[in-house]
Image 1 (tube, rainbow, N blue to C red):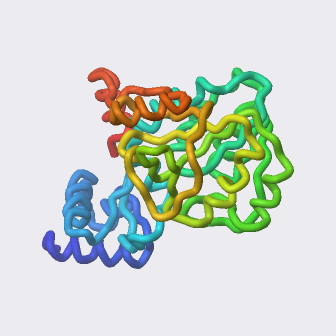
Image 2: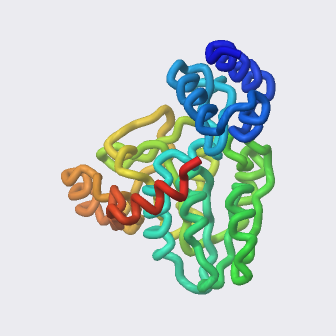
Length: 272
């Protein structure tokens, strides 16, 4: 079989199955995994598939719909881990906290260790599963309609359930923050949380990398206020940072890039 024929067959397999692993493709075509990786890279460059860690998936993303959380988990993952670690420093023993959803928030959950006794309320299945391994953390999952691309619940049931709680801190993500501190999302759904969050939590911690700051998105869902915490990286525009701090917003910064020795470790960790 020629390379051209193999590429055509791989594309058909991915489109038919939705996802496929490199090892399976190697067995199917009797070639090395390195050859399959090159094939997948070529198909992705042509926009025919999407590469994932260890395989590929069908490229049928809607530009107006957020991509699946498991794909976004692999985007800038090292930076998201550093942001998550910085955000986890805000936790205190005995707190009752709300944890939102999203890939950056999932990385934050991974950084939450077992040293603090916490009660966590979340609408994210991924986060609930991640934190279920900590013996000192009690987890309450908010019910509602499951969103397949975020693996989180939403809707009237979720919003009404949240109204029963009061939190010490809330950890949330957004898709954009403009220079005035207005918070944005690409979906109306997040308004359910942000519309009542000020009544539920005296402090809000927003976790967002610097590429989201100074930007806007489809729906304004909230506003950074005095006493809120913004966890971002040191790539934030200095003028925007100064403006936020003058408004009483607390900035906690992680490094935007890893030291060279950490880069080597991460490269090995995330290599197919």
